Length: 401
Image 1: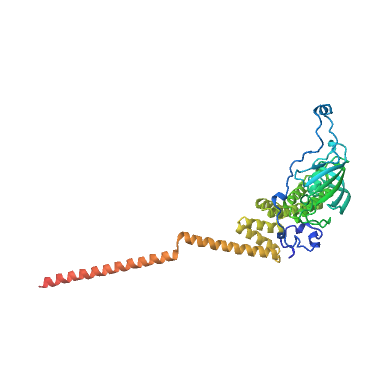
Image 2: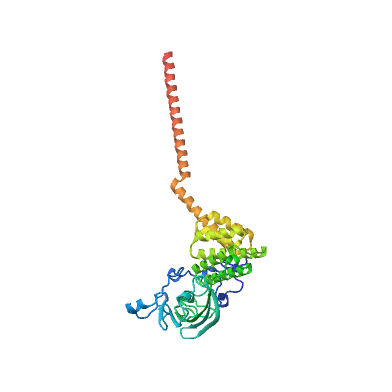
């Protein structure tokens, strides 16, 4: 590692400079502490279940009874659907699709034609064949949530608040200013089942797991740590899945490398969320595969320190430093930890003295008491001897007389 890998959060997971570097901002390679965890209300780990709240006037009861209940009516056209009920994500059908039965399911792979514009109509980007897995967080929430309500062949217009698009930070690719509302024109072209991971060729499995991990890195960059954990978890499931096809030792090593990177980055995200037990578990799993992985050791040391396990934390960081003696980040963390541990021990010693009293003073008092008692006995013995001597002398004198 170099000095630039200061916080060691996701530096092992980038193959090219991050957008933040291009924009002149401090990158994650320099410090992962620049980011502020989003408010809980801004991170929708598991969006509420969506319901079809399509509009239209209520039909008379007698007309409804005449309808064939086996077929659903076509989706209303030119009427806005408030997807989440907060007026911040709305969908309008421009061209009806093939019916409700053709709607894609969560976990399926979909292909869409997407035209992204700002609220004022400025074109941001147009993609004719954008593919992603529905519900995996591969794309912005506005698209992930609304495509689940689209029919195959349907064209729809989506208005999204920044909260469900690129948020307060905006984006460099595509170029979207901070806090920008978006207008999306979407056509659902295809929906297919996800591939069977057991039958997936190793090269494709590695590529898929890496893609999910990279998506997690994007979420981490944007301080969407809960979404990052979700993406890393999906990547891990892919990397750890069993295989019914032949895999070479080199491909096994590549999959293991992806797995350890995911565990390391997951631990970094869990640290940001203050999920210390989960972060420790991720570090332990990474070290089980690569016992001398410096980044896993570094993060494990940080977690143990946060949990108050200063002795174990120091031991772990010393091991990391031994593997890479020139790493200034580990030096700084270890120095900080030793100082904190020393202060804690000093405070504990002061507390013990206060609880048990001052042993030095007590010992001195006992010595003085013992000395005083010894002097008393010596004086008494001397006085007695003088008295006895006096009596004996009197007896002798009386006898002579």
